[in-house]
Image (cartoon, rainbow, N blue to C red; front, side):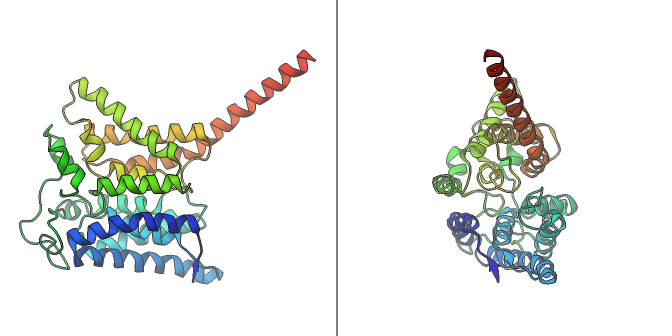
Length: 315
């Protein structure tokens, strides 16, 4: 049924510890979100492939899992279903399927539901506290469990202990809080040549440098190093900016792409109405990826032409 894709399987392997952490934190609640995302995502792609007689790509499993992990743990299941269906349909299949899509499906779906249902999702965060303790019921959070996320606190210039960011015991999306596990996944993905290290490093570098510049300029909400640890910054840097389909292929273009994403995240977080800017930043980066590649290729061609002309003159 599925088209075998080794790289996509490696991404799924890297996501397993993060999934297990989310299950321990939110129990059945997250399991239902994950299953809903997987079923609807696979079904959406299957309906398209059925007409052409093709197989469902394993990439849709990655998109579905990433989308589930990007959702707040009390997100209604109908919103989860709408989001992943939109992402797979509008950001992937309408472009011709795997390898032809311009935008990351998981991010496109996430941004669609966050804009469409901002009020509902904004109240869907709650504090993790071990399996079943603070996860609410299977279909929603317990009354009074919603709480301010670290990003919301950062907007007011408030700091939390760094251990809260690292331990994962903080409110946020289901998969964004496992900092150690995300970093371990980055090492695995880079070591297996599944992810390009330049994309991860440049994304973090762009965000870190700008957050420090803003902080020393008196912008209270740009809190380094919290800006790198809060929200989904690391999760996006490791799993979204490294998407081999939507990211640039040329090394120089990859540096520009990652830096653009990191800078955009910090700018949106610091100056816009949205406390989290990762989704917008990834889609902006996706829009420029092809341009970056073409620009680098053109400069390389021009440089080679100039070198060849100089050699002809010397002859």
